[in-house]
Length: 554
Ligand code: AMP
Picture 1 (tube, rainbow, N blue to C red):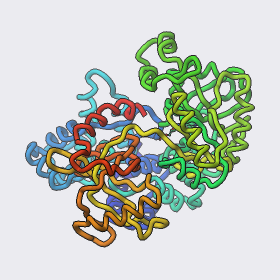
Picture 2 (cartoon, rainbow, N blue to C red; picture 1 turned 180 degrees about the vertical axis):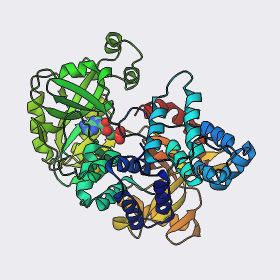
Picture 3 (cartoon, protein in one colour; picture 1 turned 135 degrees about the vertical axis):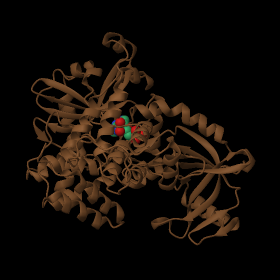
Picture 4 (spheres, rainbow, N blue to C red; picture 1 turned 120 degrees about the vertical axis):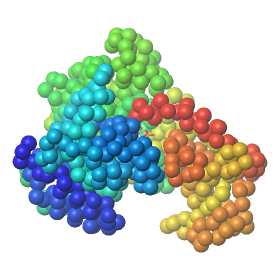
């Protein structure tokens, strides 16, 4: 590890990246830094810059809890609990606390060689490998020896990676750009290679080694899944496509990529983890298929032609029981809806209509099921397909453009989803904003609140669900009840009650309730209700705790 580059160079580069708001400068700073590194170091540096300590898709993350980090910082610096709390209140970021406190170390390391990227990676590997009984103390030891050797700014980034709170603004697209600039690739090649490799570290390594052009999809190297964009109503979907589309049932299970080559089959999760051992019957179901292939689909608890509750899959994923028992309690089927490789050839750039024909050919002779689909083009047809899906016990629809390519890792506009809501709440509008584009000139974004005792607490902002006519009427009413006009935004008297549907509830710092509804859409304006009738924080909290299991599992 001796020849590995100093970690200080990376920490300082990340500081420069953090201190500018210009995306171009962020990209330039990082790419300048990466240029000087050899491939192994570029891998570690890019991964750390992305806020990860391990490759995407690896099962284990070297995360360390706040309490361990605080304990180590106190030991190394001799600062009291109170001193640490004060620093935290000032910064609101544990990395910055580390930087401030490490200006004065009480203990000094035995070896004072500067930390290298290789040292850092080795420490992360050790943290990942420590598990089970007694591992907490050993982990603390590893973290302590890192922190002892770290300069303040290095300590800051060690802590930032271990807590997963980088806050440098280096989103995935900017990292791809920086790597492209450092190694003279086009942005498109860099992004594509990233999708296929699935890990920013591997991308940097291959790019530094001049080895990106030959990167192809291949079996047993899972790629990021294509995602669907949510839309609120069948009408919006019909308008979005403006032509015939495929409406597939939205199966409620676990997304899985099935790879087959040379007689063996492996199954990968959405996080690109190998989950083959949890689902041996999927391996069996591929028997009888020929040639190398990569399929995309959903593992669904399923028996007698009907889906079973999603919760049954949790036991399987955690492998809580022996296989025979698991398969009896929670039988599963694999519903395939796409194909990324067929007979050794990548198919992602073919239109979906072709891919489906290939998929149909491939599953013939296997027990893999094809996702059910209907051709739709009007709002009425989409609604009918949605109702059928719900009646059969599925979650809704994923509607797809027959001409679309498979956009790995992207929430492309080629796939949109329509779901039954998790729940609805009645909330009151407390503020509103003018819209953009087609909605310019009307007040179409509404911030709404629930009741917490005598107070109103905001919990979300919705800008979909209403028709153009309803929005016009809302604009008129909101102008009438404006308390304060800030130009594009206005505070309004809390009296318009709306029923808001949503997919889930998340913790949030943005709203003063501490929660945010995910994908909120207005279901109807409740003219029959007043502010006294809206829902409360208690209801929000109870929905939040009830949904948790499922969200965690994903
Ligand atoms: P959501 O989890 O609500 O974001 O919905 C997207 C997920 O729906 C995907 O990641 C898949 O796991 C799942 N899904 C179920 N059926 C389909 C389908 N026919 N096509 C695409 N995705 C589907």
